[in-house]
Amino acid sequence: MATSCVHMMGSLALSISCLIIINTIAAADEQRRLLQAETVFDITKYGAKGDGTTDDAMSLIQAWRAGCESTGGGGDFGPAREILDGGSSPKERCKATPPMIIDIQSTLLENPNPSAYSNEKWILIEHADNLKITGGGTLNTQGANAWKFAKEEARMPVSFTFQSSQNGDISNLNLVDAMGFHSKLIDSSNIKVTKMTITAPDESPNTDGIHLSNATNVEITDSVIGTGDDCISIGTCSKNILVKNVKCGPGHGLAVGSFGKHPYELSVGNITFCSCTLTGTTNGARIKSYHKSLVMTATNIVFEDLTLDSVKNPIIIDQHYFSKMVAEQSNVKISDVHFRRIKGTTTSEIPIMFNCSTTNPCENTELADIDLKPVGGCQDRLICLSERHRNQAFRHCHPSSSHLLGFLLTSKRME
Ligand SMILES: *[C@@H]1O[C@H](CO)[C@@H](O)[C@H](O)[C@H]1NC(C)=O
Ligand SMILES: *[C@@H]1O[C@H](CO)[C@@H](O)[C@H](O)[C@H]1NC(C)=O
Ligand SMILES: *[C@@H]1O[C@H](CO)[C@@H](O)[C@H](O)[C@H]1NC(C)=O
Image: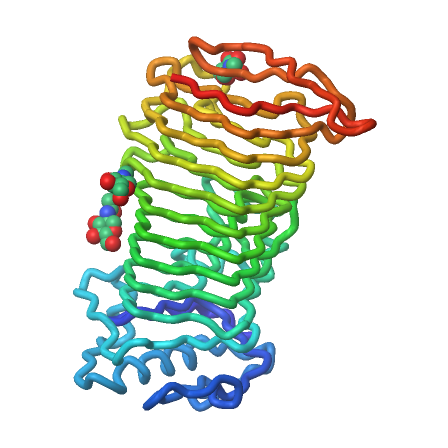
């Protein structure tokens, strides 16, 4: 089995590390009606075997290069070794007339050996504007063996990274069993992600479904995500994000953050999660920051119309994320956060937990139409709020059916 790593980048966009095996290749024109003047670059024509053992990475890269060179003319592609210099040479954009489409109709298998990756990435697409990626195919990372090595300091490779690109359209892909995060959108804007299925077991560590970092104007819709970590996590410098109609579970739920781990982090804002369903997740709607961080803000965050089934922490702002024993307070200022129309069942005795920074208390936090019933019987519900609202107990248990008692909060606004 070929296991050598191939790093391609050059002046264009696609960097593939390691083993890519195409099991079944169907010529693109058999499955999809060609657009006018569309040219197909079938990777089997570039030597891909698709036999489950041969490393086909080079074929994919060659097909990509041919596509980029084909229209617009004059693509200037550096030799492969340029790619290894970490991109110090200027990166030119793909010359093809948009849209360039990557049509993945088959299953790509990743080399399951995590040490085969030097740059913590499997598939990296960067500097590729107006790109469409679709096809109904699968990126299977075969990550199970890597999970036991996953640690904070030994990050496992990200399966799919989409970086420094604008006007992207990513749809109809299945991501399976990533070693680390399943996908990251980084330094990109105007991106639509839809009809994705992301699947990994509950116990796979750090396998976030989709992570955003410095992403602007992003829509993630109509997707099903179940992993061992956050279904979607919105990180540093992300703005104008809409997550809609996503089914999440198992996993750690929908998250804004965490913040405060790295010194370069920047403010986030205008983030909306709506019409999502969470099943068996540890968290529902969550905002999280470490105790320490640069001064930054997280503002205008809306979680609405969420349906929860057996969720442990349905609504949680945790500014002592992984730093419970540290007295130091977070400098992330969280404001204008709206939790509306969140209903369903919880396994926790504390369905709503706001543990905000005491030096930068959360401001203008709204809870409206929250209807959470315990999976078992009724316990006293304790809402934990920071500072002025600390430890207020709300005994809102009320009979909602013959045998279930629940928690209902119709509207509460906190300064
Ligand atoms: C964010 O991404 C944009 C490209 O979309 C880039 O120009 C900018 O430098 C990035 N900002 C940070 C802080 O990385
Ligand atoms: C949020 O959106 C509003 C309206 O489009 C805009 O004025 C504001 O600057 C945005 N805030 C952030 C943090 O992006
Ligand atoms: C918030 O977190 C701090 C630090 O872990 C802890 O001491 C405190 O009890 C928590 N507050 C609430 C209201 O849960």
